[in-house]
Length: 167
Image (cartoon, rainbow, N blue to C red; front, side):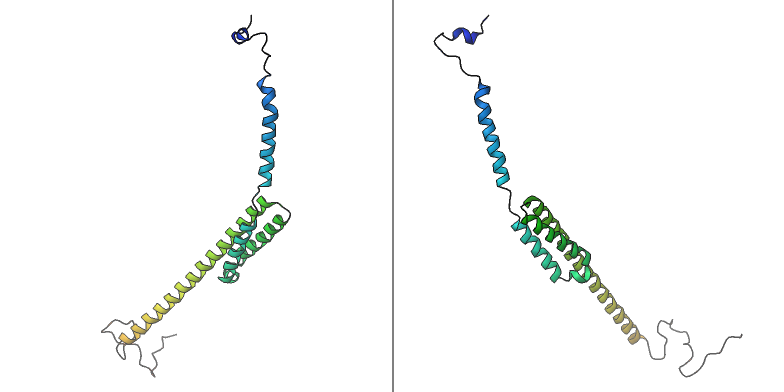
């Protein structure tokens, strides 16, 4: 038995070609063009390389060679590797490596800032300690022992000797 579509078709109408045969070459062509376009539009690594080179230079000028040498060296090594990858056209890998170099440089800069801050805190604490000692000396009456309880006799006077314990 014929299908309803075939019954309405007249004998003079030619049978249409199956859709699959008409669409296959079209889809294949579009897919191929899309793949070629995707490969051709791989982003250049120049922006990522420039950003990571700047980050390495900023870390270096911030003092990273002194405070975070290992991290700065890792950033430099990765930046050189990224440049080499970009020269051979492996831009995606070059961008990833440049981003890692940028992250290492930022880490070196942060470690440098943290170490400088730590040292500044130590200096402030040392200054405060000296000020407290100076204030304690100035507030102690003449002849009194610093830190001695008022009303107690001071240790032997300067120029005298304390009795020796029995041996």
